[in-house]
Length: 289
Image 1 (tube, helix red, strand yellow):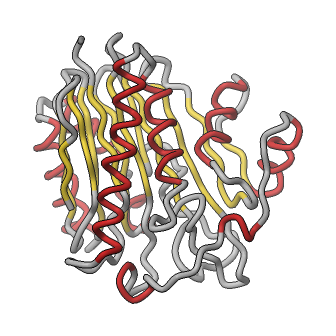
Image 2: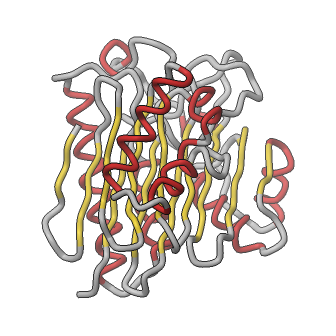
């Protein structure tokens, strides 16, 4: 098997250590990484792998994306997502979208449209309806939240994401979120913003970010990681340097996953936890929190 790799994360929000919910989040990451690895093992593209992995995470009620997203201040769920192809630099983003079970797949359809990069709110929903994209009801996204006291001690938003390198040497990234708990309707964080929530470039690296969105976007953190790789840093050192920059410049909290063009991987965060899982080539899936 050629040099392939995938990493997924379940968000660097206000997790509490040693809880069942955090364990469930890590297990969801393991399953998502396995799904992405299977795509890559079968010769699938990095784009296909990150979409498959993030769809799995969007199905997990323990994570804040798709099913399980946090309601906003009006009790509605507005979701954001980004997917980017490191070969072409084509991207698709959606923001403040309601009643979509798999936001990352709608973002993929925006990318594939060829004439669009970013759609928001009612416009994104009209686009979804115009292409026959499946819609759902609010009740399909809401979950009971007995985990409130174990997953979120604050309103900080979790995010899910994946980055991958395929056998053709192409990189891709995907990021999806329900945003912060009880957020102002229309609020959009870093997740769908190219360069902040994610970035992918075959010349450098693919990165997905998570954490306090208002801070992550100030330092354009995902593009910063790729620029550090361009300057000669390893994937791990680039992640570490970007998290230091986040803390030093804006006192920010967050996490990053990265794969560079050589297949080297990096994971870093300065929150209490960030469940993640990774697989290189056909090796065993490795997880952490």
